[in-house]
Length: 244
Image (cartoon, rainbow, N blue to C red; front, top):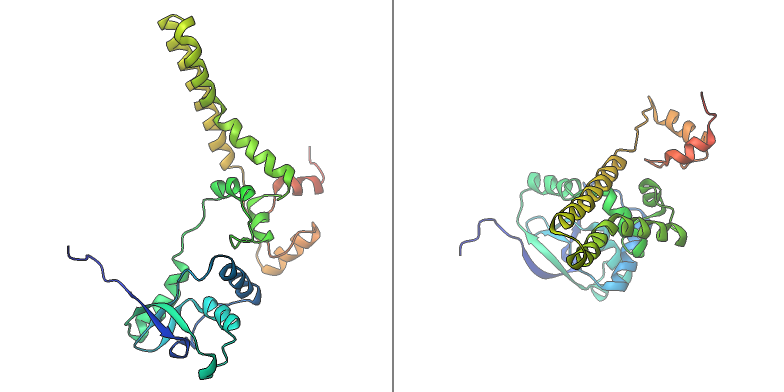
């Protein structure tokens, strides 16, 4: 069967064959590199480095390279050289730069509602999330909150469980008309609760400031980290005077 799209080739090259793109506009903090190092030690290197054979530049995966350099103690000398698995491409300079940017900007946004449900059951730091991310999601990560989230999920699906139990019970005790009405009642309850969940997803408002300094002053006034992109309305409400 003929392939419909062009594919990169997975190959092994020496670290010394890979150049870090001098134009790379992405900022890589020490914490990000350390995070990748921890992930390597936990699950290993799972790939993700794109290498342009024509220029020898790394198109994407600079943080992964930096983390491996530290682990392998690479200093540019032959004695410290090591093998790297890459996705080999052949791109002109313009396309390479475009892909360098595209590989970051095109990444999919999270479904915040699903993420809020997933976080309590995982090690959020191993997933690459930070305390800032939890603040953005409105998740206070402690045992009590985790239990509350799990209980919310269980409550959400409780009508489905109820329906199954009712259907079992009514098989012998109710008439056909009563069975039909009982099932309708449970389905209506599920629908009402689902509508309420959807409405709760819209429970947010956006604040806008003319300058970054104005936003920073506002956040510091209420003792919030100026870098946060979202804060809990309930927390802010507790700090301001009620206007009747």
